[in-house]
Every structure is written in structure tokens, then in C-alpha cells.
Length: 234
Image (cartoon, rainbow, N blue to C red):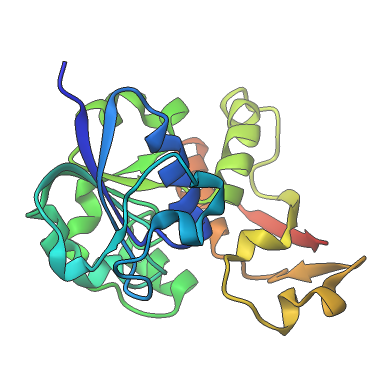
């Protein structure tokens, strides 16, 4: 059986690096290209030292992309929706790991992300990527939007209770405690070790974007009112 030819767009960050590690060890997959505009031509192991001796791949530029079976988009929020047509013509399947197409309602998207989405016509083509909820749709989908990390945890935790009508959906509170790496590899004062060591802080306590996904996926059971609180630990 031929291996699935895959490409990772945006492979130098935490998400792209972990995806790369998983795919390199998948027997049914061949990683064809990995892009990074900052590190074009450099070995992937220079940025991801845990992959030394595993692969001789080097980073490519997006302008050098070739056709493949599946392309994974690991780009910062707001990038995928601007150039989705390019990737749709490049591969048989597009899996977006950003938040650009997780929300299928444009009004809800604007409320939580503060701006209108470009290429909005693609929103209904994407399947929300939690297999436990959308397994059958995902098996044949050309477009899949990977769910947010916090959203996945809360949705899977609450879904059985909502389904069995064991909670009051109009006043649901959920709290997550996470490490600072969840914010990605772009450093700031908020992630600087002398500032963060031994501390815990609230992150977007009244308007965390992942709440939109929770509302969307749990709305099968009514009109959920969810307060989500994220606490970052170091």
C-alpha cells in the first residue's frame, strides 16, 4: 500500500514540531515537505533537536510547495483563511490546525475573534475535528479543522452530561490549568521565566476564544451558557 504523501505548512512552532514528530513515526505516512519562511534550507533537526537522526528533511518555502495527498496548516491565526484556495488546489485534503475555520457561524466568529473572516464560503466545507463527535464525517472530508486544545477537553468532558441532561446548560462553569507552552513559542514578558516562575495567572477570564467552540459543539442540546476560565502555571 502506498504511503500517504503529506506536507506541513508552518513546521517550526510547537504545533508543527509535534505534528512532524508524530507523522515521521507513522508507518502509513511519508512527510514530503515542511515549510518555515524563517528557516528555509535548514535541517528540521536544527529547530527540533529531538528529531536528530530521524529525518534529513530541510525546511522549504511556501513558494516551493508541490502537490501532495494531505496538507496540514500549522499557521498563526488569521493566515489560513487568507490563502485557503492555494492549499485546496495543492492537496486532496486540507487539515487546518489554526482557529480560522473551527466556527461555522460568521456572526459568532466575529463576536469572539473581533473581525470578519476572509473566504467565508469555506466555513461550511470544514468538519470540526473531534473524532468522538464527527468520526464519520471526518473519514471522507476534504477539509478538517482541528479543534482547540481547551475546547476539546471541555467539550469531551461535558458532552455526556449534556447528553443525559445532568447539568443546567444555562450556567456551566469550566476551569483549565495549563502550562505556559500552550501560548506557543513566541516569547513575551508574560512567558519570561523570571516573571512566570512559581506563579499562576488567569488568562482571558471573561473572553477566551475557545468558548465559542464549546458553545457551538454543545448547542445540540439547547443554548449553552458557558463560562470558561484558563489558569496558566509555571
